[in-house]
Length: 253
Ligand SMILES: [Zn+2]
Ligand SMILES: [Zn+2]
Image 1 (tube, rainbow, N blue to C red):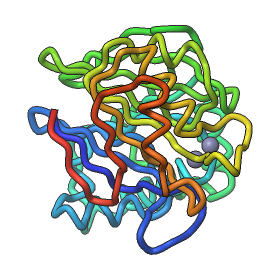
Image 2: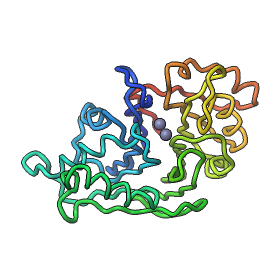
Image 3: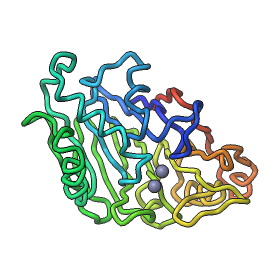
């Protein structure tokens, strides 16, 4: 499988780091992990079309993770330029149905795709909920951020990737990440600036060590958190590979 970083940033608007979005591909199946502002344009930059997106996973409903769903859904109503035939499957916590109803009301239904083009799959807030997304075996667990927040583990041909979404330190994420080949994890905090329900490099090192993951990719950077001190990983005893995400970076697994 191939991971492409579409947005390594946050709600802090900047040119070099788009809002969160990550693309995971296997067997021509494209799974979008979160859909923050600008993610759609990042997909177009890869030479892909909106119809190429097979499924979307939304980790939680903070604006930096969902705001490009609005233009994405709106575009499905323009059949002059949009040629989707197969429905898009969206996966998120149970509360997504309420969120989407409110969105439709706010935009007077202009964000509702034509009938049959969107399938909303809601996920329970229980640990290691198992299901399939296209060729991927998926597992989700609640994490410590918003009430609806879920992290996801995706497995394909003996390889595994875990995406934390936004979260604070929690045992659920460690359990979900056990022996993963790659942990794509948020890094919002630094040693100097620490906000609850987010992670610092020290927390990440701890999680990666305990879960025995092979590689970590740090993403969701603020200007204060992007200069990562790699020493903290050594101090915590994590000896795997550490990658600092950049927009449009590709990682093969
Ligand atoms: Zn965020
Ligand atoms: Zn958030």
